[in-house]
Length: 169
Image (tube, rainbow, N blue to C red; front, side, top):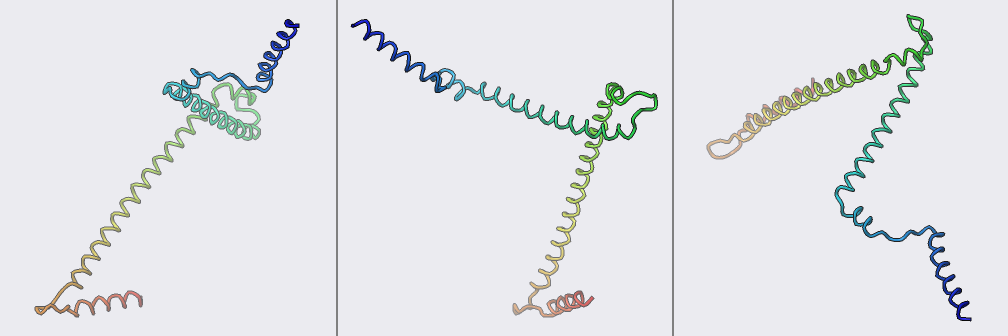
């Protein structure tokens, strides 16, 4: 009788452990948790892995685009001057020259962007300089006073006349 009771209790314990495994719950690994939570090295390796995956994704995406573009152009020209097939042309470094051409194109675009940015900056500085000069001239005209402290109306009237003439033309 006692022997049967032990078997039942043992079966209950093994059943509980097997239930945890069936549900998919794993035992808590404190060492692993602490590594993931507090280890800088772990975080750096995770970041590097994500970065590698992203770079690979972009690379394969570009490859796919290049292959689509190259198949379209190669379909137009089924054979090259030497009578080679399109697949042979790809194997002989077509991708390298295409990548080189793309690199040069990107460099030229960046150079144009830089030149445009410099030109825009110079234009803005010049416009700002003109604005400040005009503002200073207007301030001098408007701030003139007589000996008794009254504003000089001559300059103000001339400014109004200039303004009216500009709006008329």
